[in-house]
Image (cartoon, rainbow, N blue to C red; front, side, top):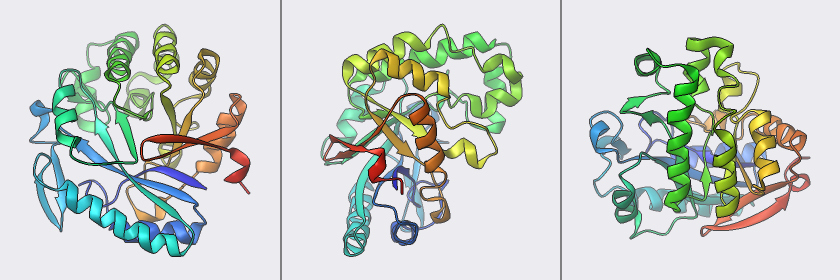
Amino acid sequence: MIDYHVHCDYSIDAEGAAREYVKRAVEKGVRRMCFTTHCDLEPERRHHDGRVRRGGEIVDVTSDWLPSYIGDVREAAAVAAEAGVEVYCGLEIGFVPGIEKMIEEFIAPFDFDFLLGGIHTLRGMDIVSDRESSEYFKGRSPRQVCEDYYSCVEQAVDFGLFDSIAHLDIYKKCGLDFYGSDLAEAHRDFIGPVVEKMAAAGLALEVNSAPLRKGRASPYPSLDILSAAREAGVTRLTFGSDCHRPGEVADRIDRCFALAREAGYAEVCAFIGRKPTAVSFAEYVR
């Protein structure tokens, strides 16, 4: 099994040190995993999202915490290697247009294996928060939500920094409860240009199992989006549980593989030192 979206306790919404996630990965027979702690640099939301945990203390995301994070992950990786598990170090970077230079300058001194780009806010509001999302959705149609969201994703692709785009239709997390089924197909007029740009850039698309833990029927993204990506020429898929607790490592990734197969995919893309390596599904699913 593989899991390329893992949050340890450097993310303030996560629990458990990196070594605890590694222990669980060994127990579950995970072959490769990558830590992707949150890195949200949006200035307007610094008071809310722009924090990380280091040594049990909450610190500003712009402080000098990355060496500690990288060191902890590398130590956990050394332990995992003894059990035959490969562990890598990455970030999930919250993207909003206009902070590209800030992102580049902040991470430039460090070497990561994988950079995952995620869209979590639109117009300054958190669309994956039960409280804030309703404020964003009020007065907007499903079509307007998708127009906002996929415009932002296109700009993330154009940025050129990320290796993979996370949870592509995550606006459904709270949006389906707000709008109902009207939101389910609102992406149809917007998804084509996005996946075409991803294909042209050689960018990977993540298949994310988190909604399955919440009782949703589908991972992010849905089958029709995966199929559109395949038809557009997106050849690389990364797989992640988006876990925030050790017990969630690699949770329901097998169902993500099944959906990807249905869309016509047969390979996993793993990144090591920011370089992609394609491996057959058969190598990870027993």
